[in-house]
Amino acid sequence: MNRIWTVLVMLLVLSMTPISANTECVEDLTGQTIRFYHFGDLSSIYAQLTLPVLNGFEDAIAYFNEQGGICGAAIAMEYRDTGGSQEAAQAAWDEFSLREDAYIMFMYLTEDAELLREQAAQKEIPIVVSSGSLKALYGDAADSPGWVFSVTPMFMNQLGAFCDYISENWAQFGIEGDPVIGHVSFLGALGESSDSDEARAYCESKGVGYAGARYFFPGVPDISPMVQGVLDGGANIIYTTSVANGPAQVAATLAALGLRDEVLVAGPNIVLDTSVMQLGGEATNGIVGQLPYLWWDEVEHPGIQTVVNYWSQNRLPQAENAVEALETRNVAYLVAWAAVDAYRDIMISTINRVGFENLSGRTFYDSMTSGQTFSALDGVITLTYSETSREPHFTRIGAIQFVETDSGLLPRILPLTDFVEVPDLKPGGADVVN
Image 1 (cartoon, helix red, strand yellow):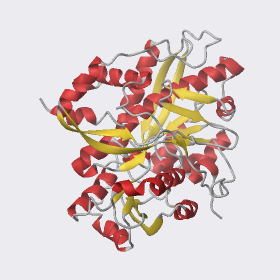
Image 2 (cartoon, one colour):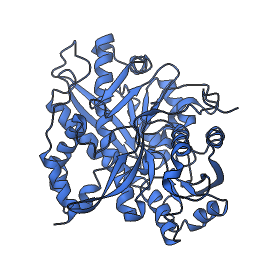
Image 3 (cartoon, helix red, strand yellow):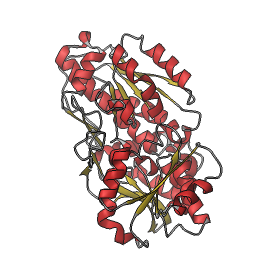
Image 4 (cartoon, one colour):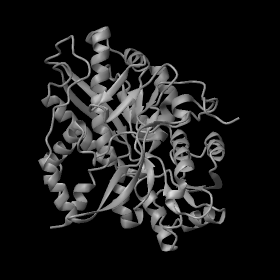
C-alpha cells in the first residue's frame, strides 16, 4: 500500500471531543434556519488551493448541525463560484447583499475584498476574507479601518515576522553570506502585498537585504527568468507570495539550477500547504512559511482531532488514491472549518446581545470590533478584532519537512517557533522604521 495512504488511514484511529460553542445561547432557535454565505474562485487559477474550502464548509456545517446548529437553528449554505472573475464576484455580491439574512459574507480572494471594500461599508455587511491586503482592510492610506476582516495577519506583517526569525536564526540554514530577500510572486493584489516599503525597511533594519521583486501570472510554465533576476541581484532567499503551483515552481526552478541547497524558499502562510508539497515533491523540503493557526499534523489538539476525524470519515473514503485524498486535506479545508465555528460564535454572541429578530450587518460589525476574542475550534484559530484592527496579530514560523518514518519519507508541516506577535508595518504602524 502507498505509504502516504497508510498514514492517512491511520488518522482514522484518533479520538474526537465534540467542539462546543464558547458562548452559551440565551434563545432557543429550534425551527429556524441561519444561512452561511460565501463566494470566490473555485474553478480557475486559485482552484487548486480554494476548491477544498467548499468541502470544508460542507463538512463543518454538517458537523455543527449534528451538534445542534446555532442555538437550535439549522445552518444552511449558499455560495457562488466566481471563476476568478471580478464581474462574477460583483454579481455574487449584488445577489447576496440583497438578502435580509446576509449579515456577513465570507470570501477567499484578496482581489474580491478590495473590489467590495467600499460597498461593504455602504451596505453595512462585514466581509471576512482568508487573507486581507492593506487596501482591503485599512484603505490605501491605512487610515480607514473598514468592514473587511482578515483571518490571517496581513502579508507585509508576516514578512516582518519572518525577518525577525531570520535575523536570529540565519546561521542554522548554512547558506553563505548575509540574508538577502528577492521576491518572486504572483502578479496582482495578493502576490504584491508582502513587498511594501515599510516591510522592506523593517527587514533591512534587521539585517536582511533586498534584491528586488519579479512577478508572474499564475500558471506561467517557466518562471526561471524571474528567479534568475533576483538571484542576479544577490538574493539567497526567494520569498514568494503565491499559492499551490507558485511555491512549487520556485522550489523546482532552484532545484533545476542546482541551487536548492544554496537558496532558502520562504513566504507567508499560503506557502505551507499540501498542494505545494504535492506539486513540488521533495524540492519543497525546507520551505519556510507562517502558521498563524494550528495545522493538520498537530493531532494532539482536540479541534484538529475533530477536523481530521470528520475528514477521514467523509472525504478519505471517497478518494481513489492518496493524491486525491490529500487534495482536500489542505489549508482551505481547515480554515473553512474554523470560519464556520467563528461564524457560529459571533452569531451566538450577537444574538445574546441584541436578540435574533434584531440581527443585522451592523450588529455583527459591532460584535466583531468590540475586542472580544473568538476562539475557533478550541483555538485552532484565534481571532480578535477591535475598532482599529481588522486582522490577527500572532503567528508562528513553520516549515515543510520530509520526515523519515517507519512508512518511509513523508512530507509534514511543522512549527519551528511558538506563537509570536507580528510587527505592525502598515503605514503609520507602531513598528514602522522611520
